[in-house]
Length: 484
Image 1 (cartoon, helix red, strand yellow):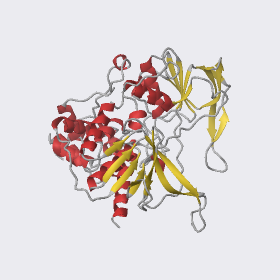
Image 2 (cartoon, rainbow, N blue to C red):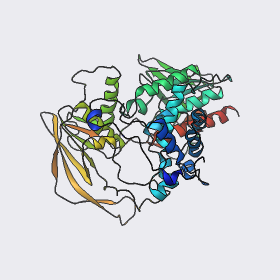
Image 3 (cartoon, rainbow, N blue to C red):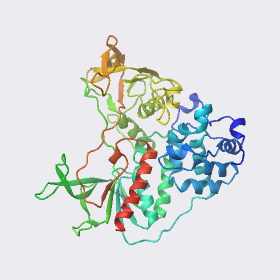
Image 4 (cartoon, rainbow, N blue to C red):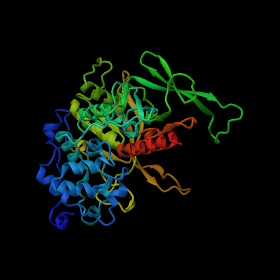
């Protein structure tokens, strides 16, 4: 701790965003950066606590006090090496992580001004690439092969870890490029896709093989006599296959010599592909879309893909309604503005969270408080306790949504509170409706013992940082299994 009084003398200073009137005209990253002097001063605010709660709060176990101290002293390479020990992709989390560590920071709980860990992390990662601290490792191969299905954050983390352990790793990805949610769910204005490409190039140079446009095809067989499965399991997966764009199917061997590609272990990191839908009357109207239909298509357009007028989803000149109050809904708002929407309204069925502090979510819980994103700042009508009743349309196209104010009361039998009417139904005008209500947790059959599931595929939709942590942990399980 180089400056023991910094936390008393220096206030939290964030880099902030580009001006609204500038950023809504392009998809460039909205977040700015501090100069080197200011960034090192912000790092000096870390108190190197005797019990650093940031360690505990970070799913990756990042040692923030250590690399913050190195950053403060201008030892950028040391800071990166310390960061890299726990986080394989700090350039991702430094941009999009909600910074669980900052909500655990002692300064946050005492002064309301946490150390700018997330921004510091991103600055360290970018300096590492700029100065050449990111070097190519050449691990000694151990002769064993692992297949990773899915190139999202969990799959990339598992592949990276296993590759560095010496395994020959092949990553199969159903899309045309790696990244998963990072590439096809998060807008470019939050994460420039060149940042992903840069990391994939490093992984490829280190020996990871990527095969795109290939999807997982499970081949479950009915339970055979003599199998003992847990209650509720109706099948066991005897083989997994990969199917390419042309329909060719290749089995992934389970180490039993049953043909296909002989991988010693398989890691399933297929995410949560099924979005939660809203089966209200009128759902079939044109102009009602799942959020990722808009977000993934817009990212593909920016990558150079073209779509017909019939296929193109655009908010240009339209009143837009976003149903769902989370980060995905926020991303839809920012995208709608950049596409030239007329207006944006966001509705959420749950109550409005309190501002600043929520007594119902005390430490060490994650504070459920009102979050205003850069997209919200660009212009948005936000409403809470609103239930969707019906999609309205004309000539097969959506024109509005009938909604109703509601309230919640305690359930006398416990569990989820009961929804009650709290106002008369009304109509919100909308020519584009985006459903951003989360994702369904996948269900899996019983796999052979050398098949491992990680990330959102195992745990349900969560944070990118948790997916990365799960990928790393799963790689350790694979390694332990193959060394038995």
